[in-house]
Image (cartoon, rainbow, N blue to C red; front, side, top):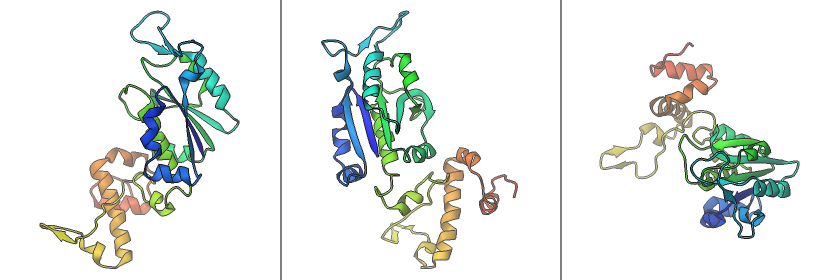
Length: 241
C-alpha cells in the first residue's frame, strides 16, 4: 500500500515514520508512506498557499490551486483521496478495515481556517477523528495512516488484528500478565486454569461485559448472534433472544 500525505509540515511526521511497527512495515516494503510539501505546488513566488476568504470572515483559507495540482500529479486509477476535516465522516475501525483494502491513499491535511471548498470536489471522502477542532490535519492523518497500516496483511500478526478491540464490534476482553497476584490484586482463576475452552467462554463474556460497561452505544451497531444475545440477557441488558 502507498499512502501519500500532503501537508505544509512534513517534519511533523519524522518520528512517526521512524518508530515501531510503522518503521518495520516501511523497511519491509509492505507500506510506503510518502510526504509531500504542499508549498511546492504554490503559484506564489513566496510559496504562500493561503489567502483571505471571499465574502469576508475570520482567518485564512488554504488555496485551491495547490491542492488541485498535487492531486492531479499523485492520483492514479487506484487512488482514494481523503480530506481530513472535522466536517467528515467519523473514523472508526470499520472505516479503517475498508481503507486497508485500498492500494493507494492520498491524505490531505488542512490548516488555518480550513480549505477552499472546491477541494471537496476532488476528494473521495472526508474523515473526522472526532467532534472537535484541531489546529491542522497532521494528527488525524497520522492516526488514519497508523490505524490503516496495521491492518495491511503482513504488518502485524493476523491473530493480533482479529482480536483487537472494535475489530468485530466489541471491545476486547481484559488481559493480564505475571505475577498472578500482587498486593491483593489477582488474575481471574480461569485464565490460569489451562482449560482453553473455559478461557474462550470467559473471554467472550468478558468482552461483551466490557462493551456493556464502557461503550454500550456500540451494541446498537452490532448484528448480534444468538449466543451474544444470551450473554447480554444474562448481564441484564434488554434484548430479545
